[in-house]
Length: 295
Image (spheres, helix red, strand yellow):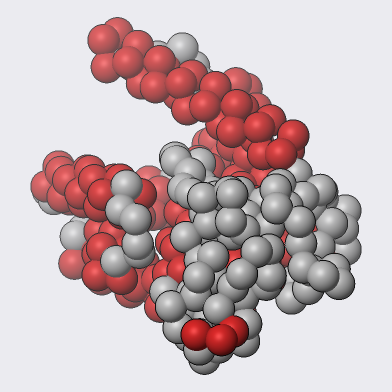
């Protein structure tokens, strides 16, 4: 199972038409090779389940047999709760321990930027590992929380105290909306959808990088993609992209459940969902900050 997110993507991707629902089962006789992302011939690392009895291990294109060490939706929920909980706890601590008043704002910003860089490095290290490492994932969540806490505190102090809870509620609303749309089959996650979202995300990230470069060289807001009318437009685009990546994450969790990914893969699911929710929260926070600043 691979968990997509706005920064990078990992191994495997279902080649079906995105019609299956959560806990859906393959058709009688098992899914065909090329449909099951874990089937032999597609680089399936789970074609032989090391946790299953020898006489029930996968052969051909069969589905993984039931096992107490196969990933379940409860595993995904619990790991995601742990990862997001770590983000929330460290964000709350940094909010109170790293003040953003005139005397301390420089130091707090420096710590926040350092934490963000460490979080990015940890995320990249995990991305290139063949197996999930819970310590890496939770460490990423901790450092990401420090960054979010300082940024949220600054926005609450200098723009509006109501922006942060609005951004949190907005992120939760996007998550719930995408989940409902996915389960109702209003969103079809297939290879075409995946390709479009990844291409759009790459273009978005490149534009933001160019804008940051111009801002560093010339000062101000660079090309204006992070403020004013263009900032609002790109904020909306960023939130829509985050919603699309949530749909990809839901599909990949579904594939892992359907085809019997090992239990440890639930950590990758939690990691991907956390990355995507952080992306949506930051875009929501920036969009609401611009709107509040224009009042």
